Structures are given as C-alpha cells and as structure tokens.
Length: 378
Ligand code: IPM
Ligand code: MG
Image (tube, rainbow, N blue to C red; front, side, top):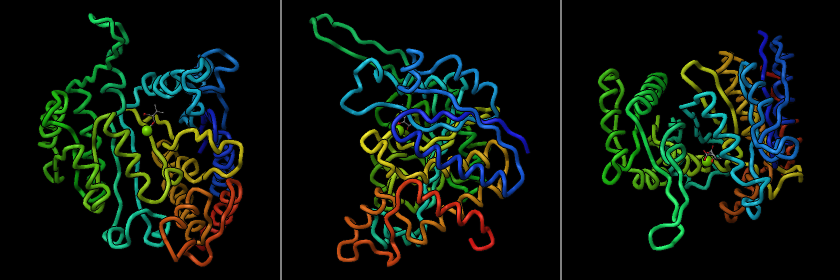
C-alpha cells in the first residue's frame, strides 16, 4: 500500500516524540511491505517563527494533499501564553485544522491492561472490574466555535463571552458515530450532558435519544457531566462508548486518560465524515520537559497505530504496533511520567514490577521496535 502522510510535529516535546513514532512507522513499512511517504510541515509556535502565523497556507496545502495527518502538539510554556508567539497558538493551529477539514468526531480510547496496574492511580479492585472505553467527543461545536467577544460592559467593566452553540445536525452526526462504534464493541453508549441546566444540553439529549431509535440494539444511558466525572474515577468499568460535547469531552477525556497511568500513553483520532483523519497524542506540548529526551513517546506511537487502522484500514499492522507497545510496558520499561506514578502510588511496593526500568524517550521506542521486529513473540 502507498500512502502520503503530513507530519506536523509542532512544539515542545512534539519533535522528539514524533521522531520516535516515525521510526516505528518505518519499521511497519519494512515489515509489512508498504510505502509511506512522510512530508514535514510547520505548525504552532514553530510555524510562527518562520511565517508569523500558527497555521501557514503551506501546511494546510500539505495536509490537503495527504492521506492522513500525523500531529504532534502545539503551544508554549504556561508562563508565556500571552506572548505573540504563543497567544492563541492552539486555537490558530489545531482548531483551525479541525475546522478546515471538518473533523467533527474525536476518538480517545482508554484501556487499562491488568498487567499494568502498577502505573494506574486507581485501586486494584477498581481496575479488576475492567477498564476499556472510548470517548467520542464532538469537535466542531460548543463554546469552542461559538461567537467570542471581549468588551467593556455598561458599567465600564471588562467582560468576555463565548457562545456555546449546537445545532441538531451536529449532535445527530456524532450520535450516529457513537452508536456505530458501540456496535463494534460492547453495545453501550453513555451520552453525557448538563441537561438539568443548559439549553444546548437539552437539545443534545433530545437528538441523541431520537437517533437512538435507529440503534435499538445498543443500550443508551444519559448521564450528567458532574456525575460522569465522579463515575469515571469511582467505577470506570461501567463505560463502553461515551459520547459528549466538545467542552465536556475535552475535560472528561483528560480525566479518563490518566486512569491507565499517564496522558503520555493514549492516542486520539479526529475524523470527518469522509474518513479523513488527524492523529495526535492529547497530552499537549509539555514544554517543561521538552528537549530533555525524557518524554513518553507511547501516545505518539499509538497515534500511528490509530492512523494505520482508521485511515489506511491496516488492522494487522495497527495491532502489531499496539502489541509491541504493550510488550515493552509489560516488560517493565517506564519513562519518567509512569515511573514516578508507580513510586508515588505504590507505597512500599515502589517501582512495583521487579523488572521496572527507567528509560528515556528513545530507549522506550528502541524497546518497542525490538518487539515489533519479532511479532511472533508478542
Ligand atoms: C485537546 C486539546 C485541545 C482542545 C487544545 C490544545 C485546543 O486540549 O485536543 O484536547 O481543547 O481541544
Ligand atoms: Mg484537551
């Protein structure tokens, strides 16, 4: 198979984790006999340095001419978010891409492997019930894309508003995606809203219920967002597919993403209705550790797996990457984010797995590559 991939590493740890992910992509290419042509483009602060904008035309054209987009992360150090280079960086780059390519559904799978309990912040008895869910987050509506204003009100005070809007087509579209996804899994959808307060949540709930008429074989439950935040920690085993709004999805999916141990372990896919997709780790640019070589490359590598599966329909290849990642983790390889986690959470059993070994970004990828080269063993 021949495919063109737009590679946008972005800022912070983006470059270093992307470099490792591309090594894995090259290994898949060789192992399975494909041809992936990767072309780099600038995004975020990295693009600003050269073009004075966060998402240059060149990068958009590159994405347009590609079969998939592999994205790193964008954004500056927390203390600098209002400097010109970083101001609105995320909105101008990633939100621009979402809007340009109409990526309306964001998939974030969250799974805890029993063998990796030691790096999860959850108690063993909670994990033992099984944690395996996927977030389907609406990506083009809500306060993210509604009218935005900062102004002086009638009393001379500064005031700011972000209009939170949904139309029924936006809700129906992502509801269909969620029900179809559930049919391939455990047949359950939890729709999360704030219908006891918000008008657009009332519409959300009504439309999801209407769409459900076409998927009677799938169980649907509605849950209020505050309760959902609690249930995710209390008993995540109850969730299969969680479908929710842009803002709630942003917050809840980060909360859920840390259940397996670190944001650095999970990938995400943003798809449009034609199946064109962008693949990225949801963890951000982590400027505090950028350049130290200690970032966890797993989320970026698993984003490659999602790309192989969703954009190229290469299921075997996707699984090979996922299995190689699992094998490296089961073998005790731990980047700093998950090594610390085990120590803090496990008390006396600090470090837990006897073979637990602190590795850097590149060493983690080395280990994953070792397992990828020996698919028989994983
Ligand atoms: C995410 C991120 C983005 C979002 C930011 C970077 C704009 O947090 O993909 O979850 O809020 O959607
Ligand atoms: Mg987020």
